[in-house]
Image (tube, rainbow, N blue to C red; front, top):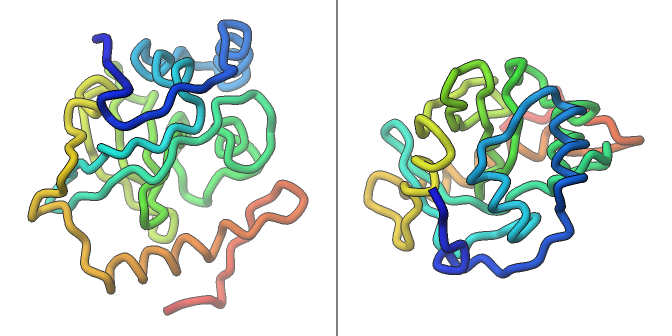
Length: 181
């Protein structure tokens, strides 16, 4: 499906080309969904204005997509699948974005349709979001619904959970095991 990315408040600007796509796919041994590749070639590191979506009995919104790069530097999809892999992230789950509370939005290559799932780095829980990337984008809405609004205490707790392991030293994520709320 072809999307009008500007309709989600995404500004155009990307240096991702077919060579970059080939390098990343080879490095991660996957073939990304066409619509996801369309997004990263339109806007790498997109921060959609319209990005609220439900999952399970909850909901959230996209904070930003990670840089689509073969470089193993922090906040690239390659880094999240290498040195920056959060503990407990299932194999073949590739983080492509994060939500406002620090949960990771992942493509699950363990499923034939490449599902979209939410990964909680502090508990290693995953929750299903959509059957594929197209369905995921079709969930995005401008206004959060009643079911996808997190309370301030939930957001604070998630932020604290996220901050426990995003500390980066020499391109390695370090869990803060003594830092509990």
